[in-house]
Amino acid sequence: MSINDIQNELNSLKTTPDSINECKTIKDVLLNNIENIERNVDSRVINIYSRPWNKLEERLKKKKIVEHLNILLESSVIDKDIYIILLHKLHKEIEFNKKIKLDYNEEKCEITKFDYSIYL
Image: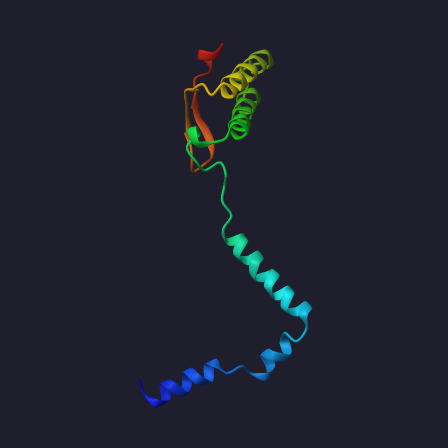
């Protein structure tokens, strides 16, 4: 390491008067810390639905079932009566930890294939 490298390192470690004046109040320090924490949290957002179906909690499974049934209802694949029957049966299956045969896409966080006729 040369003398210039050492001097450059020492100069970089010195604090400038401008940086001291920027954060001279406690409020400024707190705001700076809060901004740093928010940036850190924002960078670590995790989708709770991006896990295998068997790893999802009961309430999350129920929400995904409702989403899928709503899509089927809106696209007129099922009618309102079948929707209600399926909703009740599938919620009971989930509550009793029974396996539901379906394909779940973890990346898209949606049910891709579901043969609802089994539950009618």
